[in-house]
Image (cartoon, rainbow, N blue to C red; front, side, top):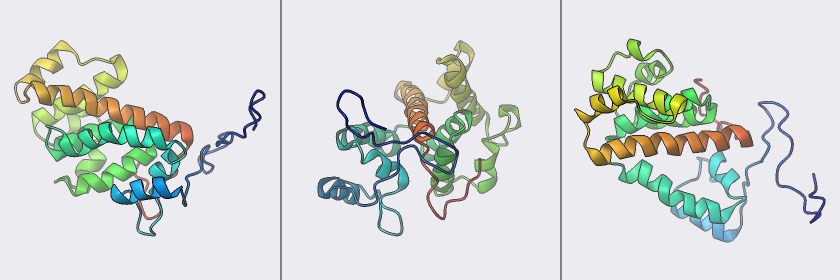
Length: 199
């Protein structure tokens, strides 16, 4: 597909089905991007970029700048890794992002979550087998998805267990992974080889 003004061929193709990405990942990006991906540890077992990062490699400036915020959410978050992953998984479920859920199902199991708990984030909040404050996290993720704000009741419940910075990180964690899910779903990023599709 060419832009009628510039004649430049677009980097994407029409999204035909779940098996054909609109934006194919770059498995051999430019030296500069490859070095960035290598430094950040964003490669799969075969040495090529993980599909989301190979896809983002089409826009190196975006990749570099977005990674600052993504790095905060994943590494500098004031929430515990378990709480963070509960929010991310639920956001992936609500956004129907197979890639996001699959990747974070792997990460969550390294963050004190069992596979049964990972799978339970797909269910009803009332059925969650964990403590009430984790139900509040699931409820907050649902409300942010549905209403783009946390209700007064849920905010008060969260405030009994989380400080102001943590409350802010709840919102920004869900927001970050809503954005990521939008990109993954729109670009048609395929789940990486060896990662099971659990959604």
